[in-house]
Length: 317
Ligand code: GLV
Image (tube, rainbow, N blue to C red; front, side):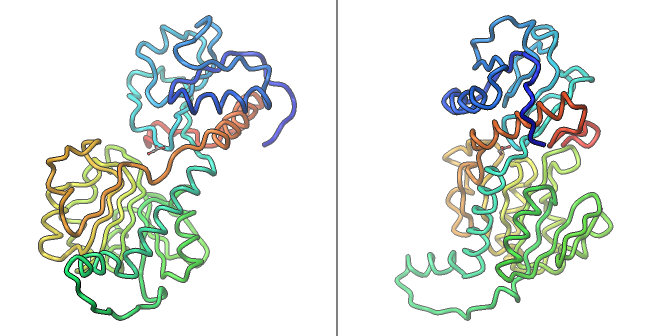
């Protein structure tokens, strides 16, 4: 929805990285000048704060901001929110914006291509000064499966499918994506897993996905499958990952998320020759596109139409 009608005057409070907040402020000044956009801790009159965008909301939210109408997450996830501490009537909105999608598509494509073209193996060979070509497999013979079919999972699959990979997806609820085998629910998880070479995790963190990437799941993959983990650290049982790498059940792992974050320098996974680690940078909210999406959502909110990324609290995402 793009509306040029002015929004009702209100304070929008931003509580996240202040440098990026200045870029949000520029977009609001241009596209929603009737909104008093403020960057934490410059909150103004708390009674006028109707909207809050935060990574971590302040304590005592309802008491501090009695007229708060919507809480926006400044990131794609909402697992950092303690839902029990939020008023039950307060709508919570995930960040669904094109900048995050693009970043994730780039990161996962890079990881999948790296695995597909045996780059981890060549890096190890290089360290040994070993010149040993491996057969090149066509992408159509490389089966890539994505766990999680939200906006990120779908965009990643579309890109990989366009590059010729044999793609499949799994999620809790049924999805239909052109040309992509879609599996749904626990019953169909084994059938999804047993036909993969590369497994990508893009699940949201909820009570049912905590510890999801464990020994049982790994045992259902074909031996030698590789993992790209861009969900949330607590979804992966690290001891099970190390055990699966030791037996070759898993060939390689690319981890952008760990538990805890930052991963302590002494953690064994840092130095594992078959693990690549990046410090949770797969994708980041892009201030300009994010602010535009949030303004669009403010218009939706006032028009009474569903906001993009509205969280279903019973699902947890
Ligand atoms: C990053 O992980 C995010 O939730 O945006």
